[in-house]
Length: 416
Ligand SMILES: [Zn+2]
Image 1 (cartoon, helix red, strand yellow):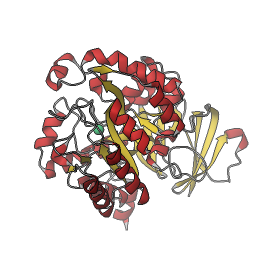
Image 2 (cartoon, rainbow, N blue to C red; image 1 turned 30 degrees about the vertical axis):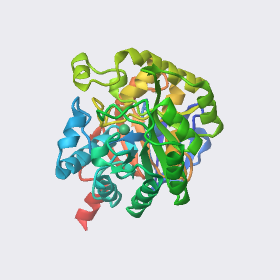
Image 3 (cartoon, protein in one colour; image 1 turned 90 degrees about the horizontal axis):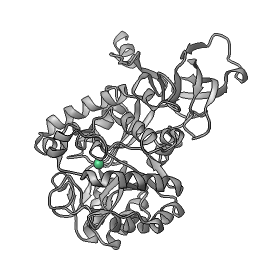
């Protein structure tokens, strides 16, 4: 069945300028036509939904989330002590909140016991309303390394290869490597690499051989260098940590651009907006580094790095529906152009995940993942907090900001 949406303002996710007075035509699960309304001949009888003054854009993609974690001020400790049952229930709740906030695809970057894969498959079966989920499964880390308690601990190259192959056997969508220590794990060192160059290369080569991309958590400059040289597809976080501070490395950034690698900012609230009392509890990301990190983001953008805007949801103080707050911060405070911020959660994020052939842009042939937001995010990013409607694969799942229950698909099943 064909239908169409009419909008005064279409951002198509390719990074191109906005199309004024546009029409998007949807046939079943896919987009079949898009462009200025004056140039599209609609077949008779096609219903047109008028978005009024609202903006239409692709469903958002958060390239770095932890669906099983709450994102409260004590999220790390909570997740470490949660039972598997509690973690999975948190995942269900997060999946629904994600969808309601305009996320139609998320990449889960840190699982335990393959629970996120169960969530992914349940959503894909249509029985649970949620975003499309790409899963890393449990991450690979060194013994006692970042997030060791829910990860596969590996130290030698042969152990790393065994872990990659085991993850692929479990049908993960990509591989996540903890390339350096991190703030979530006392005793790990964010500035130091957890493997040498050969370790990074072993993971990248083996995953690529089996058709999987690799995401590497890298805080320190040393780990970033190993990840870049190994050709790791997405570099997560990248705050250039070294010698107790932040040390931007222009040569390293030139190599990121030359190798066409993607930086996924994965920047939780602890980097920019945590309240003082939460910060004391979290004891992470000392405030004196904040402004220096913003400068690294500006410089990477100016150098032509592909910057994906991802939230690291689940980390301290960062909840699943808060990606728009980061987008607003980047546009208003870091002065990254709004088009680039929006591209970082749509077309570019799809490229990071390797799903750009299916989603991320509003172009003919793509799956119809669209959102309708109140206002114009290109001039006022706070519009992204006001998601009015969410359509996933042609099915309207959120209307007037509320999750539809039962979903149209489940309602049809009940009528049979
Ligand atoms: Zn993370």
